Image (cartoon, rainbow, N blue to C red; front, side, top):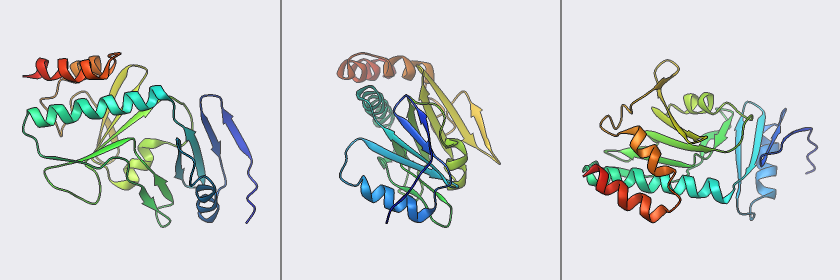
Length: 192
């Protein structure tokens, strides 16, 4: 099958294509099957193909390690879901979050999704997660952690409703640490 695409380019490691059918999405994903560091997001015919950078991967991993350290220290039962593929042809949406978690029990849909953003444009990530019914979404972008809670639509919040005692400014400070090991070690000391 040959797929012809018109593309719009974002110089920051992201390509966005419009007018993509579900079968074209599947063909494109299959063509990239064995290529590491490439991720896809699809919503209503718009396909975003992104490559990850070392900075993206470091921020993603550090955020996850810090959050998991917090939940362990506070005795909060959690299940790290990693980057499960969310969405379906019926929903006309498919994406893998950077990190995701269930709190208390394992569920089909994550309670919390974390996205590290180093590109602009592309699909509307909040619209995607609203369609999936994700209760809380966190975006790490430009040194800031922005939190959103799903009501009828997403509303920006300043404190997590899932983890109300978590100091977001403290967490953000440690996400920016140059050394991941030191960040987690010092964060644990700070929250004890």
